[in-house]
Length: 143
Image 1 (cartoon, rainbow, N blue to C red):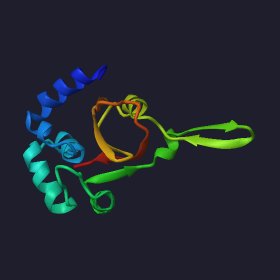
Image 2: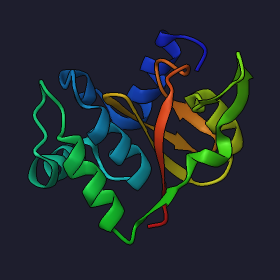
Image 3: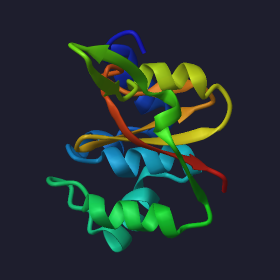
Image 4: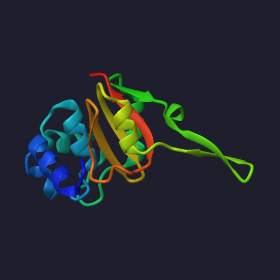
């Protein structure tokens, strides 16, 4: 996505207009995009399993526990995608940005977890308004 307008149009094309009524709906949006379910079904699932609220989002601890215990999701170690360099003699490890992972994950469906946000990569296409977000965790959807 090159700008917010393109992102907005693409997300609406994929999910319909319902996602716009949920200011904190990044997790249901990402889950719907990745699993192929409707946004409404993803909201229902997130509400039941993750304590989703349309104003505050989901409980991230519950989300991580669900993803880690599910056979449908495979955690991908991001350490292989981190940059390591020295600054004043100290080793600094820089986590990857969402746009860089989209280039590496050209096949498959992935859930990216960033600070207070979640987004999806579908077959190399990043569905995200801010591609410079720093990624904390990656999960591959294996169905």
